[in-house]
Length: 325
Image (cartoon, rainbow, N blue to C red):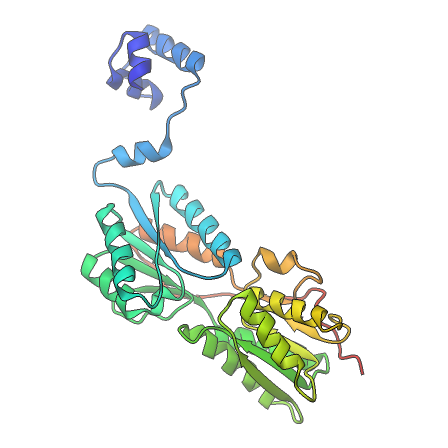
């Protein structure tokens, strides 16, 4: 803007007024400045304009989720939401289980002028992160977790209900031997999804569910899938607690020389881009991660109002079918 001002022989304030459509500029001056803007290809930087505002206009996003597919959805939604309300999004990595690093990540956001923070799993259930947010005075929206402290806003789906719906789908197809891959124990959603699936299985006479531990990563899904496939009798369907682990289960099925859904039906949870990218495409539960992150950014931009459950959707694709008797 300073360069434009020098070329036009005006002050930077005049250039700012032209860029922002201020009427307090003579027509001849406006035309001269606009001509130079066109010649130089100058485009105002939205982030710089936000930073220049008195008082900031910044919110923060912590991230520490092992799923790259989940992270892509999270970032997409948060950036879109921040942009829609004219905010600058500050992003800080954190490391769950390392309290000092968790606290430092929150402190960096606060030092950067963030007035609110979006907290995705598993950080929304970490005492170190929540304590640091409380000390900072920032407003916070936790995603996919309960509001464990006063003043927190929570956006989450009904994990038990959603998992019950998926297990019910497998049972309705005729499966009676079902494997389940649980998520990381540092998230309440892991136990909620297992309990929901187990309740559905327990409601059908003769149905059995075997659970194996995972941690929401592809590798843990592959290894849990191998353990389930080694069982006798072998499950005819496997439900994994997220799409990354479900993709790992698919790989374990293929590595064992079996097919999906012919030999083993496989289902996931989240409906990230990965669910529609693997082969066969995954039957899954759609947890609207991007929309949740977008809503969180908008809530923080509007003073942190809002709360409550988020709707999920059952998505039927190619990876589930009746058992091959």
